[in-house]
Image (tube, rainbow, N blue to C red; front, side, top):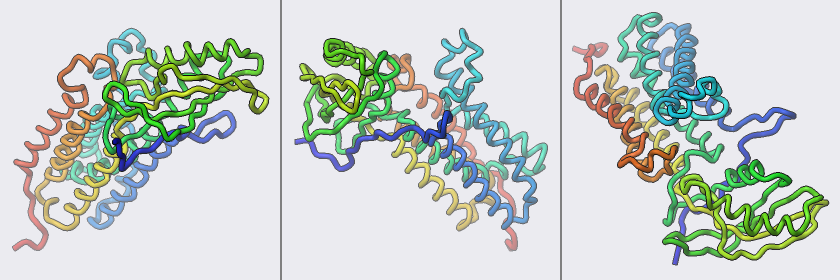
Length: 361
């Protein structure tokens, strides 16, 4: 019998509506990552008697590089076929589409420029301090991905699974006229299908008051199930329940149709990554303060690349593909991009630039 240690339904809205503006949780977490990072670097600078006025420049370099690099990384590595035909869409960062590998490369380049123009210190000195906070920022960004119900895992049939309902709700409302709202209520049933144990949900679909019973029944029995099942497997978060009964009712001055659907259980890879990046931050921060590793310049930076992108390579085996062409690859794009960064990390770990330790005799 299927048992689960960590099974939960994720149906959180993506933000808070403030009049005509939506304050997205992803944006809040993204900003919070940099604010906390700013405070940590400030603490490091104060203890090392480094000019605090460097901080504003450092933050500007990192933020600009993160946004620009992440966007261009997504454009060139994941969807160049589309953006090459629609170059005007590249600037629409607010519509989504960021790649962490692109951000990593851009940040490294930006810190090289910062070290030459502002700090006048070794590039490795700057990198060793900056990457500590970047690891923590990665934790906040993955929590933001969770809030957005994006970058989720592949189908799961294990003791760890999450069902993401918000994407299904948004797709149904945006794809069918006359639908005003969709709600899901979890039942105690599960259905075995194709080797996967699917939790069963009661789905209520609210229509405008002029919708008739015939239209509602057709939408519930044919149109919505066919649409959900037609999505690429990696985009499915809800699929149809075979031969599900449907109901028609008046509810709260609206027409409501009710039927059963199957939630697609997926690995909560955003939470797994967020936890891993938090632990990596703790590791790097502890090594920096509790050992002499910072006097072997480049080793903190090296450990950052090895642990972050080594783990990224591993966790990609449990993720849904981000773009369709990855289905034809032995590894996915995230894994191919992680390999060279791990190799760079191994190089700098093996050959650090050694500097003298204060009071070293």
